[in-house]
Amino acid sequence: MIRRELHLDMRQLAWLAGLLEGEGTFVKGSPAKPRRPAAAVGMCDKDVIQRVCDLWGTRLYTHIPKVERYKQVYRTELVGGSAVALMTLLHPHMSVRRQAQIDESIATYTPLRSIKHKRFHLSPEGSEEFDRHWLAGLLEGEAAFTHNRGAPMLELNTVDADVILRVQRIYRERYGAGVKIHERPPRRAGYQPQLHIAIYGDGARAVMADIAPLMGVRRGERIAALTGDYAQLRLLREPWACYDVRRAA
Image 1 (cartoon, rainbow, N blue to C red):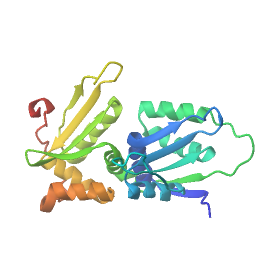
Image 2: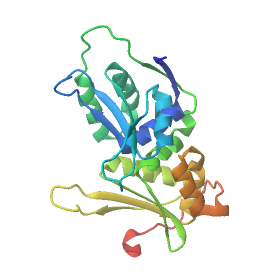
Image 3: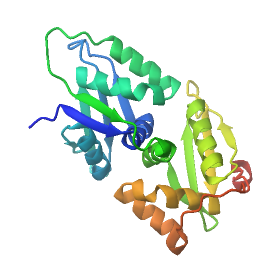
Image 4: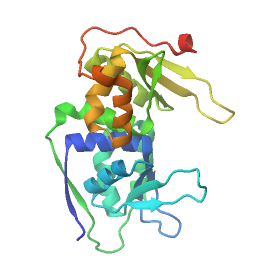
């Protein structure tokens, strides 16, 4: 049975916004179907995409790569009015670049006949946890969970200044970690500069412990391996020393 009435709270919306900020696709209708915009997401983590399916009321699709060394990709999508309903909810919480993509996608939607599409009902419950769940969704898809000289480290690269400034603010306000942003030159002509932020040591442990219950299996196992018995939630009040990527290099 197709679920057409879907209910989200602010925590679920935040997680979706973070995940789709990094891994989502917002497209205009194709030339063959110009009035069918779509919102889609694909990853190698089946459990993460299944979670999206549960929130969207959609099916999970598996793409088996032709090259053996590549991993399977799992994806799901919303099309037409259902995609428009979701994108309308997401729009205020996305970056400037993603908002522009959503605007272009919604602009192509003109229903030709009455078709019942999914409707999303948003509850204000969990508003106070929005930043935590947004950060977990973003880091699920975009971050590198690694270490630096034995200390756990969390790195993020993006081309969106507003996204990385938002991450920096959450690190500072929620975890008391004063972390700098560094700009890396484009890899080649025509590419945009990369913005990089990294947090390590106790600051990284605090972030990882906080988001661990919200992560997929692969990320959760990686966090456990990096933090071990020290993984205890610490919402710090005093800023930690900044990680300087230039010094580490």
